[in-house]
Image 1 (cartoon, one colour):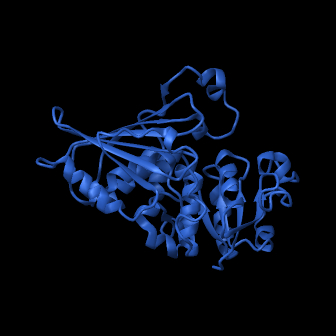
Image 2 (cartoon, rainbow, N blue to C red):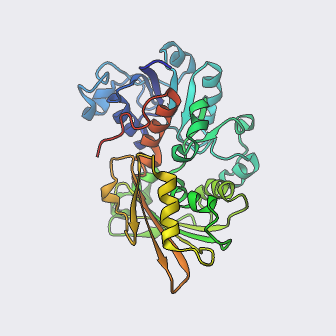
Image 3 (cartoon, one colour):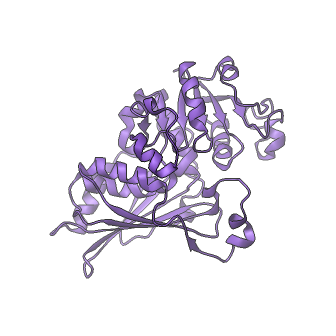
Length: 349
């Protein structure tokens, strides 16, 4: 890749797509050459999103319908797929065949098993032959694989908040085999930008509710990645909640430490795992992360506590579901693929 990579965004009209545009338009090493949206085709980017006026190339770009031949002609080297689940896969294969690397924000390539995909997404996987090639791209865990990949599957928002505190502890063997319990809260933007009565302001405001219990789709990728880290099957219960805010995820995980494990050991393992990771902020023992401190950033704040009376380890994390849970993490992966500084274009607070 050159020092200035040409990129395209497919599905640029959703919340994740808009955040991708915001980050790419000011990225020091990226040039936005194409933006697609079936609903906005023919409209000028800066007219549809006035906040981008006079920012980078926004005043010269027009939305087009997604077409692989046109994207190839634009010179795009990397395509971000900010498309719904089940739609990204339609474009990934022809884009790869055209020599364009793919960074997918949907769930289409996160799972290694086509059977598990069918179980959680209720239809056959359209391109199972690509599942072995796709890299589940949690950059703090798989940087070396990401650097060599041409098909990158960005983790889901909830999984990112769950996996980052747990994976180092499972790898270090600090946790017992008891099932994990995870409770997460997310802002309404996590459901996307489509009109939906349950997500109307009057429905969400002054309300708090759980949903997709007991089998949220993200449970599949969380279980997959935790089991890989532990080297054995890991069981967990996961309960997501919708809270009346625009964005942000706050996750609390309850785990059983092995006998004799101390909170100091937990801290030492997390510090060793993330010592060189610019976007992991370890808050310390008994420190509770707050979503207001990560909004609009690529940071994940992590705290932990040991409840000696209950014999439970409590792990806490906060992130921006549109940022580290989607678009800014995708940019972080692009930086790795292109050999840029992993923090390039992402250090705003």
